[in-house]
Each structure stands twice: as C-alpha cells, then as structure tokens.
Image (cartoon, rainbow, N blue to C red; front, side, top):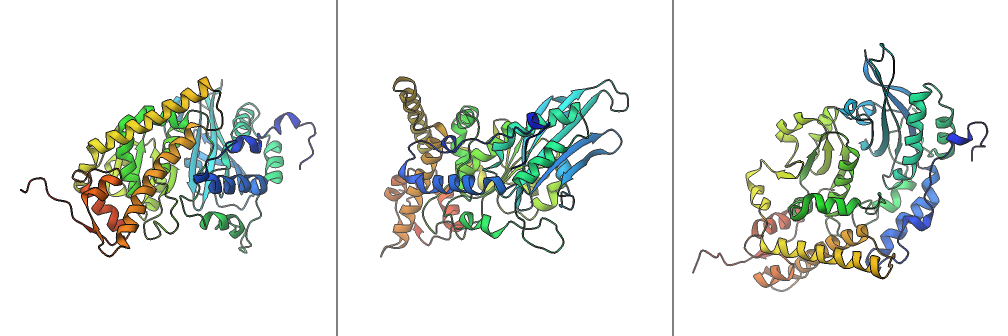
Length: 428
C-alpha cells in the first residue's frame, strides 16, 4: 500500500466493502456466479488495473493522451473512447468502453476558464483499464475527484502514480511491454463460467428500474434480439454514462445458466461506448451491444442489425422486422416482470426486506425464462420424437404462431436439432 503523505486527501479511491458487493442472501440460482464475482473482487481486485491515463482536449490537436502509466502501454484510440463526441456541451460524464480484451472507465469534466488559448473551456478525462468491467465502478469516485483535480491543477500526476502503483496488475511477459492479452490467472474463472462472462455488476441503485421504465414493453423485443445474438447499437446524445448502463442491461437479457448451452452461438459482447475509430473492429463482429453519440453510425447499416434511437427500436433487416411486433405472450411476460417488481418494492417498503434488489430480480427473471426455453428444447432434441409442438412452445412462454420465426432463428443459432411443427392458422 502506498504510504499516505502530503497527498493523502487525493488518495481516496473508493473500494466498496464486500458486504455491498453481493446480496446478503443470494438466491440459489445465482449463488455460484455471485460468489465467483465476489471472490474475484476481494482477492484480485487490488491488482486489476493495467493502465491509468489522462486525456485532454487540445484546441489545435483535438483529443490527445496527456499522460499515462505504464508509459509503454498501447492506448491507441483511448483518447476518443474516453471523451465522447459532443461532450463539450455537458459539464461531466462517465464512460465505459472496450479496448482490445480490456475494459475501461473514464470520468470526464468540462470547466470554464478565462483563457483564449483554451477557447474558454478546459476538458479532460481520467480513466483506467482492467480485464474485468465488474471491478471498474469501485474507482468511479476516485476518477471523478481526479478529473476535477486535473482541471484545477494540470500536470500534477502524483496521486495517479500512487494509485497505479497500488493497484497495478501483473502483466504477462510479452517481451515488448505492451498490453496485448489478459493474464491467464484472471481469465480462468471467467472462461469456465457457463453464462455471460461477467454476469453480475453493481451499478447505482435504480439502474435496472430506469431501464425498465425507459423501454417498457419494448424490453421483450430487445430480449429476443439479445437471445438471437444480434448486433445491437444504441444511439444517444451525451451524457453517455446512463446509456452504458443500458448496454449492460441488454447483456443481462441473454443470460443462460445451463452448462454447455450456447457454446456454438456467438459470444454476446458488450462494447459499451464506441465511435468512428471502432468501425474497423465492428466490421468483424458478429454479435455485440454498444452505444454511441455519433449519428453517422445510423447510415452504416452493414455494422448493425438493430438500431435504437431513444426509445425507438428498429431494424433494417426484413427477416427481423416481425420481431418488432409484441404478441400476447410478450405482454404476459412483461406483466409478470412488473408484478414481481411491485411485490419486491412492497416487501422492501413494508417488511424492510433488504435481502433482494431489482438487479437480482431482473437478471433472474430473464435467466429463468431463457433456461426454460433451452431446457425444453434440449429435452425435445434428446427424445425419441424430436418434434416441437405448440404445447412445447406455450410451455416455454412463447406464442406458437407469432414466435415461430424467432424459434426457427434460435434453433439455427444455437445448433439445436429439433423439428418445428406448428399448424399454420391459415390452413383448415
């Protein structure tokens, strides 16, 4: 631990106690995954930072990396990822992003200054990189303080140096000192997990409820696109922090905890914030969720399957357009989700029950729905008569007619060999 000296007031990186990281009484279904995340945080969290950096906006050169540790780290493009397009219109923001196999969190601030050279405004971001996005939120408070400090006292990096020395990860020996791959010891428990690589993350209270209120019934449309591993792009003007939370919530819609299920399907990868510098990367991706503040992406239809502008969910792919229409089974699922939320809120208010939260409820609701679908499909595929009937489809909580196209795509993407026989309502 770095000794606190005259710079002690700035060495206040916030680490949430383990009790706050997991529910007091986790449900059996998620206990293993929650414990694995908690242990990763407790045991490895202090050694998970692979880089720390300061990005500034220069009136002549634009976004540029002002300072970083280690000095030989490959941060190409981070200057655009950590300061979103359009940020000059807002005073502060935070941004999650992806850089290769690492995840980043940067806090941005914009301060008016009496300087003709800086055109009346000083803008900076202070950020970090880590192999896991589940740990990044722990340092949000520190980064917010540091970006304010950098605006007021440019060039004073000693608190950031101390932070990096205290939290730096042990990097694999690559010979050139560049960050190119995640340490195997870090990836081990993640790779072996059967559900979304990093299922659990603690965001500010209300992240899930805001997502539900924002999209309403449209969540069921997003759920189908997520389960089909489509490329989902969310557009929003700055601030982008809350939109990064929507990316995370979208990822939670596709969780499956049945061992081995989804091995043949593309990995559903959160990219968080992206910009035009990421176009080449996105051209090779077959499945992702991301957000952007750059409207130009809407025109680049080859890069996405689903485009979300505010609450408007749309797709240019003709085969996916039927999925935009809600059916009775979708509305019933949404009604059950809202009902469970109300019961949870009631128990919290009346009984003082703090053992559950909306994030757990939300994640479990969709995981159980997904598990029911894949469990049924697996049982039918392994039976003497691998034929999926209308009764099977209803048992999965789907509509035998309206969800037929969705099921056909699902069977193909997950490589499940069953025959779908559902009577056509148009035929006698």
